Length: 318
Image 1 (cartoon, rainbow, N blue to C red):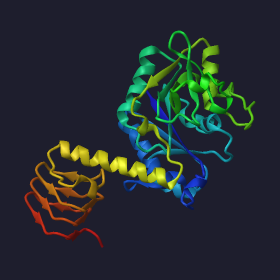
Image 2 (cartoon, one colour):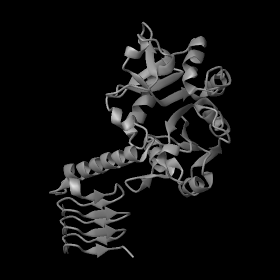
Image 3 (cartoon, rainbow, N blue to C red):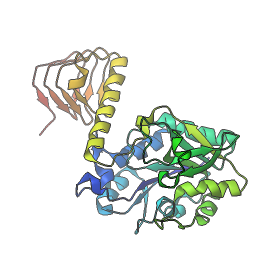
Image 4 (cartoon, rainbow, N blue to C red):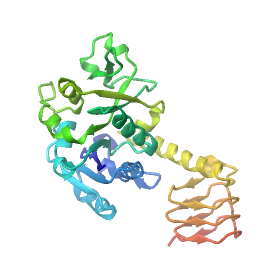
């Protein structure tokens, strides 16, 4: 089975207040778009296409480095239009998952569950849903009597009763690849914004007599998008916490977890001790039983097993 991903990454991101394209802002030293594509690959996606627009000349080198495809959205005419820009690249795919270039915390397990749910139920479309603490501003998922998606309604268009719904659309979804082009062709821009919305795909597949399946994740944080520097910093903190927790559970001793910076590209052997205020980055490899003194910086080098690194040592930084 050919599983393709289309990653939406064409937006300008004005609220980031930066000349850098939004999707290139790093979360724990890795650009958000690279995290999104990497998650897709880890979930078994075999073909990656990133839809780019603003600042594309800065995004393309990263895509080339990783062997990922791209498509250009010249005008920002909505999410359905963005996906249609990548149709040529995904025309042979059996299924197409839509991801966001500014959602860096999404787990590969969640993407895998979304894909498996669609396959298991033979749905035309499966949509990832969740319930955040505050649903203000989100499109709501309205279900029918069978528990399938009847429609996705934007908050500004929702009735007071519909606004009480706490299950929201994350924008992350997977399509039966054989019908994607037909579905996109049926979506119009007859709305106040004159944009082509991917959420309108629900109505299209229902008219085709096919199912639109909701797939719920309890972890609302992993599907939170980044729209400003504060949200970017929060995502970095959460990713850092995940990495540190993974090392702790693998037998690494980290007495002050909140103070260390450990990138997820770093390998640390069992029984090693990482002191306070350390930074481990790049392709650093820390052998088993190593003691890294407080305040040390280790980047892109290998530390042999059982070494003792003095406090405030610096390795691998030019």
